[in-house]
Length: 400
Image 1: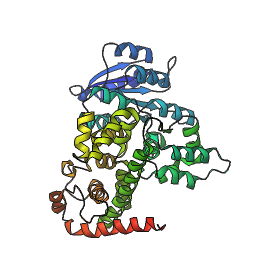
Image 2 (image 1 turned 60 degrees about the vertical axis):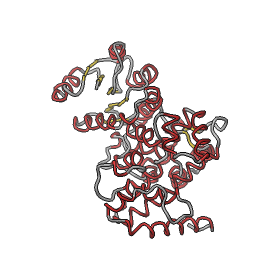
Image 3 (image 1 turned 60 degrees about the horizontal axis):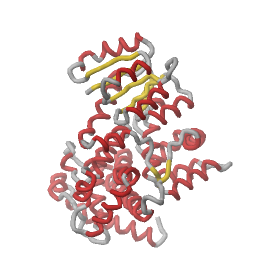
Image 4 (image 1 turned 180 degrees about the horizontal axis):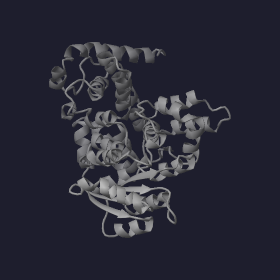
């Protein structure tokens, strides 16, 4: 793995070099004192990860990372900054996958680099890797994008209404969690709820992020059928809600329930990546799935070479979302592949996905029975199915 560090202060680079010396057998490290020098070094070959200071003379970090995004789109870009003003944060958001505050603890830095690459092996296709690494946002449904823009531009923008719009939109939720969980804000724990994240940032910061930095975008309705996207959104929202209730029932832990809810909401992020970047292949996948001859996962692998779980987990891992959420996305169809041996958020999302996929049936579709029995919750499944059906009935009748 090749890692490039860029900082105009030689003492900082020497300190990083000294502290990371034990990793020299695992990482091929290079150190440059300017963006120009780093671009020249990259002419020899691409880097897996680039860690750059933001405040540098001449070409600053934002300009450098912007150039990296254009010339080396498959590199993972990590910004380091000692500046906490909103302008610098907004510039980082536009050009980096993750943002760390200076001075940065080396354990945090190495953990960030290793984690960003941990699920990269799930996506082997170089074209797809470049597309994912180059995504700075996920497109939202046009109506959700219009709603958030209108709210933010109104004179009496309500944080409560903003949070409600964001938490019912997969793309906005993912981007907001990426931003709020960055080290810039000095949080001691991950925020797992988009509503909580919105409340933390406040109206003014969200307004600037959206209207100035352009962190949200919308799907082009001429390229992707709105009904296909709406189906993904609706399924994801239902899975998230059911997974949250199941996790609460098992653990009573609100944080774990939040992770399950976000894991369910994000479970189909990979489908959005396909739809946004490969609309023709997305349409082909939908057509083949409707034919009903093969599973969704098999169809996606045939058409894309990868399934939506791998693609979505790859993106969210690069973006630095909390581990439990990324695990939900990666393993909700194959929970036994996750190393956890007790009931965790991915377990709840797996069960919720099976319940929602089964529709009105009382028999969850695609449930890993052996896995569920091993966890000792098989007897709970009928109760969770009834609860999900009751929630759907309430919604249809105009209730909660």
